[in-house]
Length: 235
Image 1 (tube, rainbow, N blue to C red):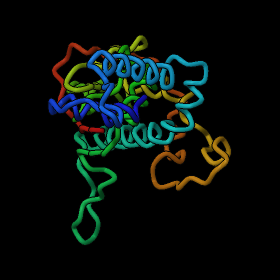
Image 2: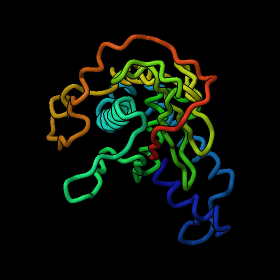
Image 3: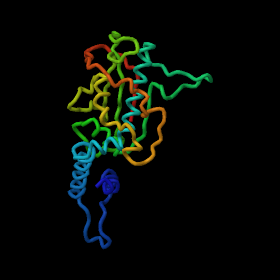
Image 4: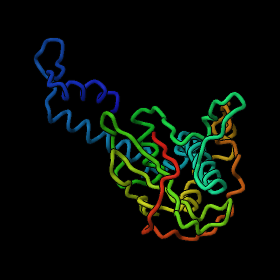
């Protein structure tokens, strides 16, 4: 149904006539477009969250990006814990190592956004409207409760189009990073090539760089603290 929406939604948004048959004897109606949109919403919910094979589909399609996002979050948390605040390291020529930048921007399609929301088991997994975005923020408790190099003082906030994402497993207004890691762990394939039967480029992220985080303690972080943002991520 998404293929139909790519053709119909622009017409609706720009108040253009809906398509008709060649003889112009029959045309789509606004009711038809609503029905197609409703079916597309159901299709996304079933494919990315509710279907019997949704988790396997997520592992194969969204898992590598979840690994990259996870690695980036913990890399920034580690840097912030060791230095007090995340600062991107620089090469000898003075340029910044963008793998440790304070802000990362990913360009996506609607399927990518819906798949990420589905992976998180978000309450709403619909066809994203134009200009949709997901923002993942890394925050730190300024009291510095954690040990140097630890992660219990960090938590994340995830927003979709400016609103906190509602999920059943954590409050994503302030969710401890350990909880996020434990939740996403089953969704990240150990070997993408083996599971998908294809080759996958393995860069600096998503290839097991942070296996040391397997054994997290479930220590909760009090969200009612005055926190400083450590880094921001956007998709």
